Length: 135
Image 1 (tube, one colour):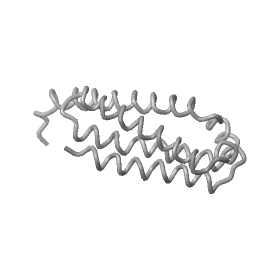
Image 2 (tube, helix red, strand yellow):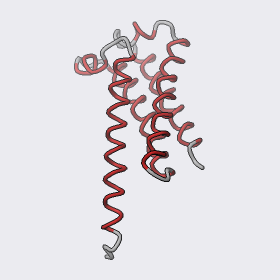
Image 3 (cartoon, one colour):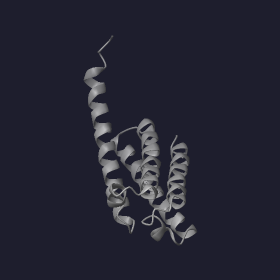
Image 4 (cartoon, helix red, strand yellow):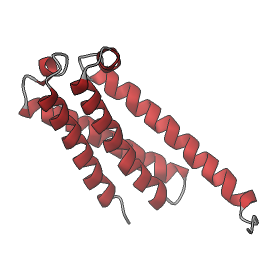
């Protein structure tokens, strides 16, 4: 095994991974504060709708973030596209909220269909977002 790449490769990995974790954390906090219900409390109580919707939103953000990492030319480029991915995921929630006016009540009431739909739209838009980030 050739470890000659380690002095330059490891710092690049650590910087990208660290920024990615920071961006996921920021997304998580922003998303939780944007939604009018408390996902973590609902999930702790066994609410499957909240778990499905939050899982879809996280994956819908992480997939394009991974694309941004693999296609970025530097950390600033990665950061910019990471913010674009964040905005798209917030828009996904707003779109589903318009399509399902009872969404805000459905998730806390554990209506799984609403949670699955929100999670699926979030993940689907995330996949499209990731595909558009290739340049």
